[in-house]
Length: 482
Image 1: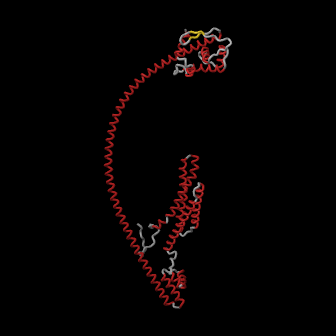
Image 2: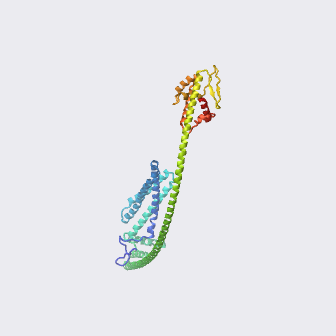
């Protein structure tokens, strides 16, 4: 509660400097324009600084750099707008202390201009409407102007209460000014230097001035002085009565407010105690129920987990036994398949080697002698080949060239120069292309013979000789051996 101080006469007087004064609605109302203007400028400055600094940092370090840019914008806006708010507070203090406020006014104008210019530049740089900078400048200027007017009014009110400035002069009605212009002017001239509290005192002072001019100063001065004294006395008595009534009403209102606040606090405390008691009881019952449910759930979950572990162990043991049996059978079959594959590869490689040697031997004998070569077909019939004409040139296939190379070099693949030299010696002539093709065919045969997954020869060999199946090769080998 605000304390009401009285002087020695029992009348309300000025409160001491340390007393707490109760703020009125007008005191709070004067904070709205500065808060709105400074808050808008605060937000725009944060956005502008974050946009400018954050864009540069994000290009170098990534999008996370907007966070330190926003913190930097918050610090810049807080320093600028906080300085403006502190400048307004200093203006109030200097004005109430009767100090000079010229520099403070200049700084207020500089703040408005600087903030508006910065926002205008940023809006123009980003292509935003620049009208918002002018709107912000108008808001800031109007807020500072209204604040200075309010500060000036508080200063004059304090000076008037302490008697440092004269009260307002009484105002004569317009009819008196029109009908009695001379009297009105003289009256205002008389009360300008020594103010009169009321219009009655002003008119009495005019009558005294007129009586002095007319020579009737004795009686008139007494009457005038008496009238002025009575008027001032009645005014002072009335003022005291009004102040007493106002003080009594204020104290009664404050007492009622205190009583209502105490009753409301007691009711709130009782209701809060009831609510806390009921909440504690409900919470205790809920906790006990939850504990019981949790205990039952834990026991049920333990039973289920035990059953599941036993069943899982039994199923795992059965699966391990079956897997071991299947794995042993698979290993046995795999070993048998590997053994059969190795035997097949060995037989096929031997058969191909023998066939190549026999073919090369037959080609060599046919090339050096004029005897017709005897061949054996797949059905076992031995035939005599028709000798080539002496004038005609014998065409040797690439397969025959590869067979000759295989017979001559059974353990390696010869190079192209060595292969050409051998084939020219055997067949009389051989081109580089045919020798290269024969070497490639021989390499493919050797690779297919070494590779375990193709026991029946390479795919290229089977594509070039689709009629040479395993049975045909076996028949040819048997015929050559016989």
